[in-house]
Amino acid sequence: MKELYKICLLFVTLLPCLPSIAQPATRTLRLQEVIALAQEQSAAARQAETSRENSYWQWRSFKSDYKPQLSLTGTLPDFSRTIMPVTQPDGTTDFKPVSINNSELGLSLSQMLSPTGGRIFVTSLMQRFDDFDRQQTRYNGNPAIIGIEQPLFAYNQLSWAKKIEPLRYQESQKTYLEEREKIAVNATKLYFDLLLAQTNQRIASQNQSSNDTLYQIAQEKYKLGRFSKNDLLQLRLAVLNAELAMAQASLDQQTAALALKTYIGMKETDQLELVAPEGIPATTVLAEIAWQKPAKTAKRASTLAEGSWRPKH
Image 1 (cartoon, rainbow, N blue to C red):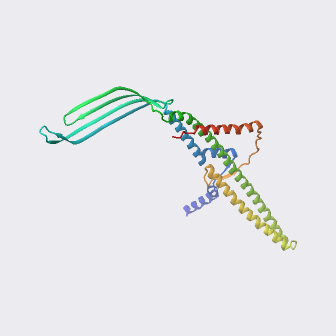
Image 2: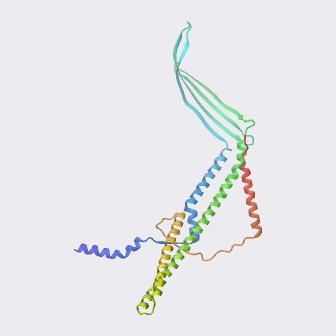
Image 3: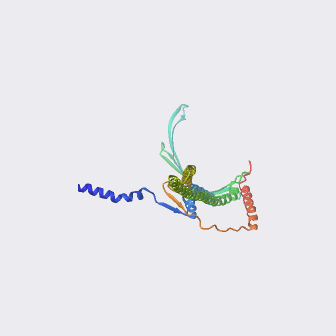
């Protein structure tokens, strides 16, 4: 009996805490915080960051093509066993097995020549030949082979890449900044959509409360004979319209909140309460700057278009 009493006492003690445990905490966000979250953890931000990293490593790969290349090549081993026909002194043919092995190891240092599209190299080779039937082993070595490879009347890819790839890398960096600004614009739009929906919901709630209060007062007056039934029905219709507006405002608020939380990468169970900006910063655009910006943008686009050109073969 005492244990049952303790269990009931514990349940009564924890009962007031259950609503606070079940309801998630409300998170208050300002405009700059929403933009920062969108630029940090949204799917669009991760995609832009991935594209930026890909462009960076492509740039690093391009630069490595113009650096000296040290390579090690080899064939270890190249074993062969065949049956070869051998003509005897008396004119007959005898078939004898031939078992050989060829091994080769080479170390090469090369440097690309971007002005001409050629390649200069220094190579050191070491070869070994094994004849297992005759128990013979031979070696051949070339300490240094110096040479140059130069294609004639061919497309010089290195020379063109040296002009194009820096422009592509600059374009990728500016594209990344542009994508971040687009993310900020989209996050701002979703922020104000939710802020407007929350404001409309509060207004609809106040209208519903006011219409309900007026309807209750009108009911009391109607019982006392001081209010007509037609006016009472008009107030009842106003209450129904207020409830409908409240339901629509709640739906709009939930839709806007889900859109914002999905975009900035928050959980759907998190509750949001937005704080309206205190002031709008004043922005002054000079006429000279407004005229110069389109000209610079057009010049940059023309430069990128020329840098991406490839001759036809």
